[in-house]
Length: 325
Image 1 (cartoon, rainbow, N blue to C red):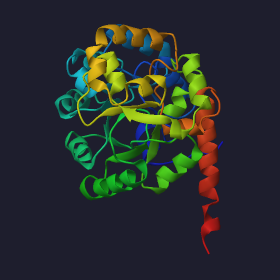
Image 2 (image 1 turned 135 degrees about the vertical axis):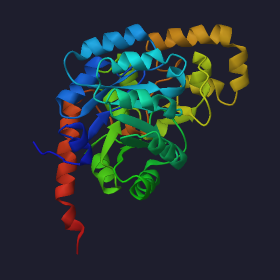
Image 3 (image 1 turned 180 degrees about the vertical axis):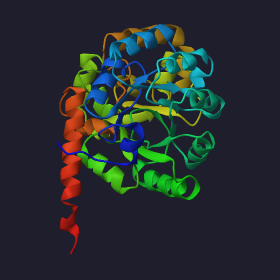
Image 4 (image 1 turned 30 degrees about the horizontal axis):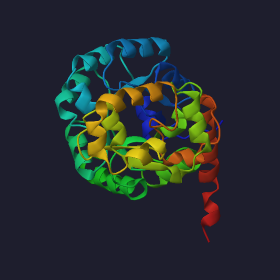
């Protein structure tokens, strides 16, 4: 099989420049381990901070080397979770959606590479100041939480900034990347690799209800929307400018433009939302996937996803000379 060698593969000691996103609730140890075994690096999603769940997922990964990621603003309320994750000697520790600088010292002292997910150039500079080994430039096409920048212009702009100000820092692209075309394009944009969420969310190892998987397979990229409604329903106080990309379903249609009304009805709507999510109802609760759902036609194993991405990207990069006159 082809191998794509980049600074990312060299730095992390992996075969392919592919990371799986540390998706809250969906990105468990089995998924992370499967991605690593296929030659990438899988990241366990620390989510909103359940210590027992984190232990279970590191156990599920077994002896396979994986990383871990946290929602920074949430983890800040339980900083002991960072210490817990670092005790497992992860291959990398990823922080997203908040200032990484208060936690960078502990991560550095543990000898673990820091990955910072960024949505603006200001975030990129903050990550560099924190000593991040790897910056993830996340476009708004991504499923789950994010902000406003689009992947196509944001990645090369971040690459230019990093080249000027911190050339040893690596860059990973995220947002809308689900196949070898996205991987090849990200490398051409100046990234050292990619971080994929939706494509690995739609894998057999992901902790995702089968009805949610079915919704993603049948969806197009047009059928997603950025919204704050799922966070209101879950009573999660997400800071600005972050909101969440989810399926544009009946729940969204019912409450669109009525944020205040949903807050007023939360005593009833909150439990109903949680019940619907646990049941995998694709209409009454958010299904968390991004625009890349339009590129998802099946639910294979994560290892097969890595193999497909690498083979397609290698073929495309190898034939790129056909465009030269």
